[in-house]
Image 1 (tube, rainbow, N blue to C red):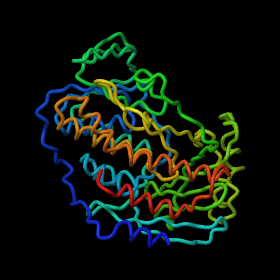
Image 2 (image 1 turned 180 degrees about the vertical axis):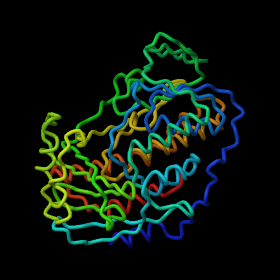
Image 3 (image 1 turned 120 degrees about the vertical axis):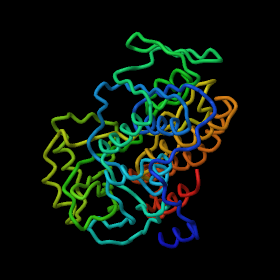
Image 4 (image 1 turned 135 degrees about the vertical axis):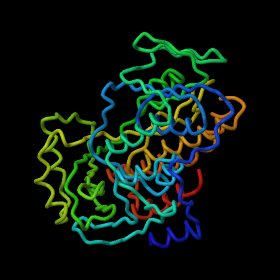
Length: 399
């Protein structure tokens, strides 16, 4: 059924041509200076996209070590296309593992579906699994080489939009004045709280995710998804490594002590598949287990105020069930840079950016949440293969 859905959704969609990794967009005639708050995926891609349009960019990141947790991330075909538009496709693909299908299994290991995922970028894979540290390295290197200034261990203590500039005082005592500010500071965005103090806060879903890295068996050449409870997936990241994710109901959002993470993850790997069971005893390193309560947020109102705008998880934090969280932030970056290069004012650009992004982001947030709620018995059970195929069709449309 999923195959038919994909064919119906994609039709004769053409691939984007192979990009030139060094090609840059036509520089904007504006000389606007931009402060990007947050040095994660959204902030770095915003910096890269803005530099490609000719803007002066400074990025600040609160983490002095610029650290990210060491498991992986799934990047689907729309994200590969977006990374190509950023001009970092070759470094990105070389740092990860490209694949072109999803396999769906019953809990006992019986394969029930093999879903091809069409590539959208010519001569590149449809999807990529990549380690978060590797992705951070690729994006950080490109942001720096593009001319963006990056300051670590810094936060914005005061932000004052004067109407013609945005004056910012930083935690190290320095100050700066910018034409506009972009908050890419995550689900618990301080920038969002400053702009919209009455906006909804992230909400715990009732489910959490456990992740762990393993040596990749040669047969795992794409995303493997095991239906049932718990939800389990295997994602290749390199020729040598893959990671596993396990989604489990965690009523009350319990705190799991760090020293118990490995044993608690093993307890939850109850799927009877022989492939999964062969991995249980390999989960031994507490520091290697990444445990995250799953939260969501969708900002229904404005995404900007004056000369300050938000992107990524700061406005649309999604659960990982459709594999689109980071991808949405990367697309946001391309769109906001594009609109800023064309608009007469930042405010005009920010409104058009939200107009282009809201429907797609809301679709992913709400449908991913529906899958989550169905898995924990708080809503109708969702057919994962059908939902994933439909989502691929939606995000494959131009941004």
